[in-house]
Image (cartoon, rainbow, N blue to C red):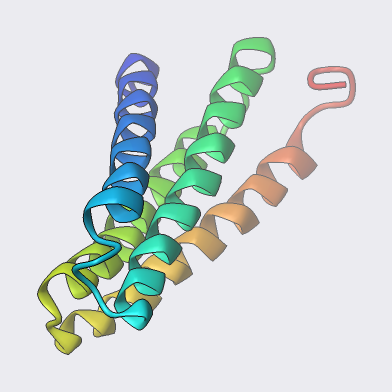
Length: 129
């Protein structure tokens, strides 16, 4: 995995997260129903947590490069695209059919967390202590 691209991706995800949060708070508050606004904000919240988690894995990699960290980052990136992206589109367009994509993003998030656990469990003692 090209970790330079991962850093750029995390930075862009952080940018989109802040922009989407501001857009939701200021631009959509009077445009969407409370339920759709909550849907949009859920997408922002999950993107925020996983962007922070991705940043943490990248910093961890600098100190202790481990096999599997790239997989973790990739799964979370897919999760952000599918989960948060589908919620953003659902809230903005009202197209309910987009909701079918959201659980796949959630599964990618979960798979990323499991991959992180495996990655940490496989670390040699002293490498990441």
